[in-house]
Length: 410
Image (cartoon, rainbow, N blue to C red; front, top):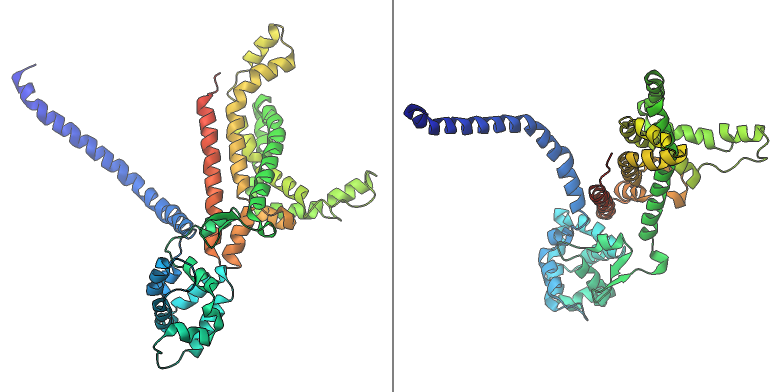
């Protein structure tokens, strides 16, 4: 290498580094719009919604000084006179700013009568401030002398709370702050999560039992016939989910096509209850989610050479044994992908169970929608949604671990 080339070597390295940096900057510029879109359209809204599950800032905004004093109170007996005075001084300003209305909705989750207590107290407060509000407030309403009222206010004082997340698994804190299960007659959400898992698991199993032979048929038929049948598999994607769900109501209702056909064939004498129950939910969800099982299975089966199975049969294996021990293990990647895809999608289903199911067939997503649209309890909706998201991530992590631990070898 000549001396001139050795002298130019640092310059060449610098030019190469600049070219690499420029290449990276161009790549970042190309993906920047997509990243910004994902942040604004997905990450930020979802993060904001999940934050509501632990947000407890209503009292901090409406009655900041009272919230601070209540956090210092031990929760036993009545709080100090300073707390009474702070509450009485902050209530009028909170009402003028509108923050009291939002705080009132938060109080309703603790005790529906507390918001009324606040508004009645405001109306009856004297014009001239008394010297001792700890005596005046109980005279306005005797409930201010009840420690339980102040304990309920204390629960709303911290900026963050685990109340909603605990309520989502039927757990609450007692007066001492210890965790305990709610009363048996108030346990709801654990049964709802169990029901959601059972329905999703049943739908996934039925989709696998129906989808595996159909995917095998598509993978082994001639290309022309296989492509024609694949069109019928993909055809439901061109129809609205709501239309497909409504169609099952028409088919499965008492006077529907299915019941009329069974009666006409003499199989039954009276119409069966096939809709507005668990059966209707599973049938409709299976119909909707079946293509999501078939497609991963078909993509894996299409790449499996039939020579392996023929070789096993030529060596003396029974055709079913050759299929089960040689062919099926090679499809496990497609089975795993289709199963996890269908199961995760089934976990979040709302429209189909709401239209085709009864009261005991509603899944977690129904209650998320109920708290969001009906009661405006966004915090409870966010807590349920957070637990559903965590369950989905855990299931995916388990699936990913099992797949990486036991890779499928062809």
